[in-house]
Image (cartoon, rainbow, N blue to C red; front, side):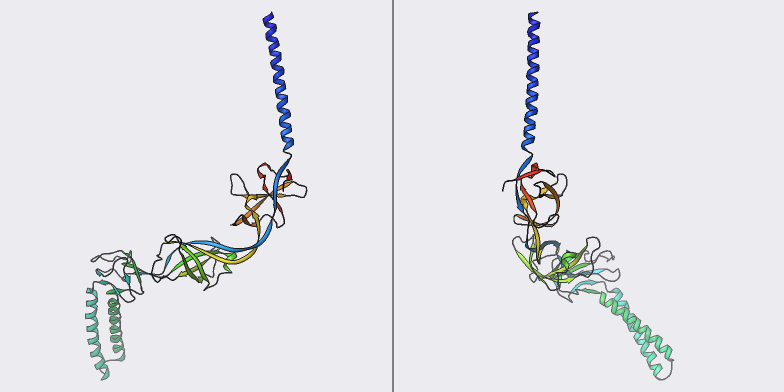
Length: 344
């Protein structure tokens, strides 16, 4: 009996102790919530200032002119005079083609001219009609055009000063029309194609100098160029205008296919600036927001559209007005409508 009574006493003691602990935890939690009723924060006023409208564009270097060198019809290639990488001059013979057809066309032209000379003598003395003379003259002209066309295609010349960038056939191959025999590119100057948004294109003019062009192939080096074409129509998919920039390339260091970055300055504009410390990111999305202080010392979150960074601030395109007070410290404990206590 004594043992049973002792166990009962211990059980009562344990229950009592447990009850105190729960009561104590409840009181502690209540006091913690009470302490967080007003969150200590630091704030800053949103200002406006003039900001350079600088935009960076990426582009791939392109040749100024690209010529595909090929005959008009399938023909045997007798000799290719150049290799990939060779520089060529305008009018230089690049490819010599089989001339059997040319020789046949020359024989036909010579025969037609002899025949026409006989017709011409007869016509002068009234031996044939004017219509017969015209028919023979037309035959000669047709044979001459055929011969000249074949003569022009018996050798392929470069139409530009440039460099050979592709060779798709070898000596003795039959040209099949699927690929050009050679590709010649003019790489002085070279060009870049930029896609400029509608809001900035009004500031881009033909002839405008570009002083900040960088190439990944030449780190730390800057190149210059100028705007050569501003296309008059907008790309419906991107809502941008194509803009062509040319770079003088006398030493041909800038090659087609290189990756380039072009920085354009579109002047200055008075912009709303928000401290970077005030900006919060919505978890699970790319949304950015700030907490704006209300007149009753509560806060409300405002979603913002960020522009580019300027030192310790960001340009804000929309979402917060100049003169607003935003929280720059203590945001982690805030929710909409929460009271704050400003430390600064």
